[in-house]
Image (cartoon, rainbow, N blue to C red; front, side):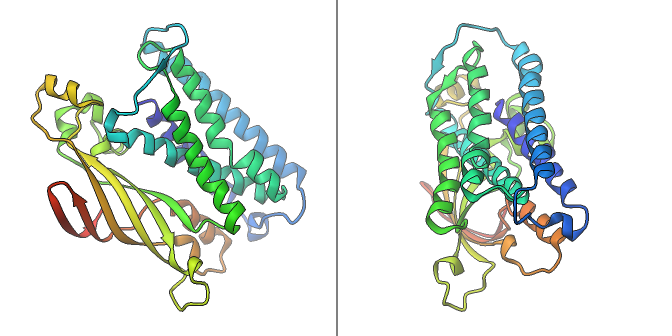
Length: 303
């Protein structure tokens, strides 16, 4: 669950930091066409400070609640029907994307943007994983490392192949009945539930149609999205659930829907462009088809 804290970093640290940088004049918001040392120094210092403070905070505040141990590994690949792994993929992708964008803003070369910026998510989450390895409650998970690498690879691979992100990772959330049954695990408040309740989370691969058919008249902002979610989970594994108090049947959910690519909406405002880019991590509600082992469900507006 400490990935919850990492998601907090995206929502309340990096994104506000980006928004703050984007709150000034358009000239300031425009990426530099050559290396801008003051901007680069600011980014490096900010990221190093935030990363160090976050890791120290995790070590002192989060892991202090659990018994320490020798470094060890665990295999948690079957937990939460892999929803936690998708959380790692999403977090690594988004951190890498903003890391790369910030270096682009400072005029760093495309190669260095990918090498130093896009790997930000993988590097940070690997450091968190090492802390897990010294906690008796958790443990170093190679599955998490693979998920982190997948998120980073999705971003870098598209930049190398297409010089753009044709397929974006997005997130959506709706409240479920399960959080009330296990608020300690799944969250008491709405905000906690958006981060902890895997039953209400959906992770999406959102593909921009115009990017694949550039000569077509398809609107540049129109995407098709496929999503993955799961339901019926009170804890990580089915065996534990059966011992708690539940007769819930856990199952996977697959979704097909449309989406909006907010980054493709035309605007002359650098500020509005930056705001749209920030909120483009959220899947826009649209009519959606859900497929699961119980059948097919149509949602007029799936959140």
